[in-house]
Image 1: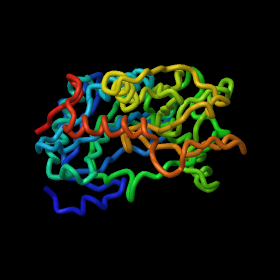
Image 2: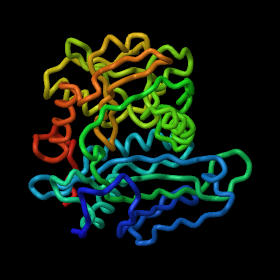
Image 3: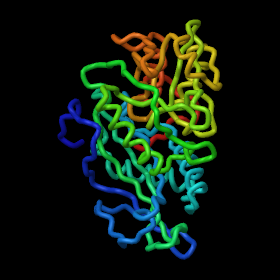
Image 4: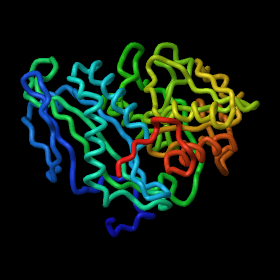
Length: 337
């Protein structure tokens, strides 16, 4: 294991020993390989640089209590990336080979997987992009699929601090657009809004649906969970929401582990004050509690001092499953080593 200050890592890129690279040319993927070279060389007119033909995934590797290295549900990342590729007119990297490439990459970087109990994890980033020179607006003919990983620290340094978020005036994704896939262009669209939010003193944006601006969708990088006053777990429903693996897992945990009622439905922005708790869920933090939502001067408060009780149960249960302290549903944990 590397000699790092595991408890003080941030969420930032750090070069590790190996990454996986596979190339698509003449209608077929090569076998792919591990390499120590982190650099990418491409033509100045590469499709990804001109027309943003790229998609990505994010997952983590953990060291469990009994010393094993595992990943959490990488098959769902493979399936979601396949969906992204089909929407972006990119060749699907076979889902079984995707999982195998994740295993190869994590195993080759086993010394970078943080120790159990440190709060740190190994973040794994698969991505694909159009690599050949394209000038007219059309899909690329050649592609690269790559995976790198980097150790990252606990998301909440110094303890959980509930977030203050705002209902954004900007749109995250258009109806029938690309909001339901993990395309790089979706995140580029959110950069202006998140910088503006930070400058105005907010931690994040919550986006309404672009069609009516009536219903809640998600944030720039996370799905939303809401807890009713009688303990039901609700998540917004929309065709332009990214299907978060963490959110789907939390809804299963709520129903099957905690015995809670769950519901996926349209959530009106004007009903947010009827909920007791709110959280943002994703790979990085699992759940980030929301303390306050500001809707153009109207403040909805859920408690600014700590994570809500049901949100905390959901968080601790899912993290316990990921870390091997709670028995996982079949197929959720992929053992690496």
